[in-house]
Length: 202
Image (cartoon, rainbow, N blue to C red; front, side, top):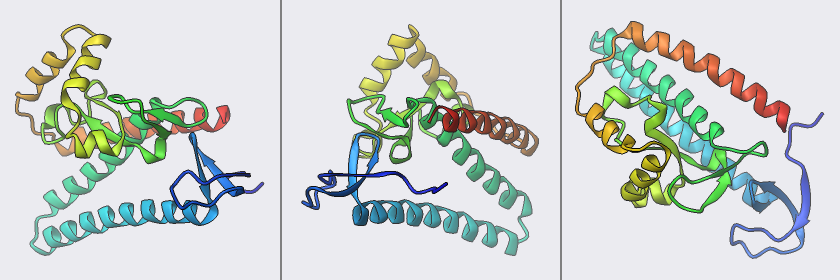
């Protein structure tokens, strides 16, 4: 069985102007083959840049003899990776379509971001699912999380949740390596279950 996405004929949605050509559907968007390859390359480069940045920091810490910080940085990266995938996949339908929590944008989950209501620097709730939702790049980056709409949506789900998360975020917390390792084990197990169900439904 081929692992490549199925193709069809249509107009490319990415703005390259090509019409009635072979395209690949990702969420609700259609990509011509060249645009699809460019999009996947961009995603891979972005992930590689993050990995390289973490690797450089880890190497620097190891060279300075700070093995504890190097391990903790690696754990943080792995936790962020698993947590982000879970948040975005949980916010998707069986076809992988994912709507931004704070605007009508709908894209494939792999093209969305993991937005935090209270920023990731607030370690107490960095990996709290109540505090993280799928967001488009515009809301998460350009609109700095689209904070007011984010708060409104949270309070629609649970009255007072936004204020509750604000209060929790003010409490300083330092994760131990043991806690991070256990959380990573739990998240990886949860991610495997979601990915298996996701593939079955597709």
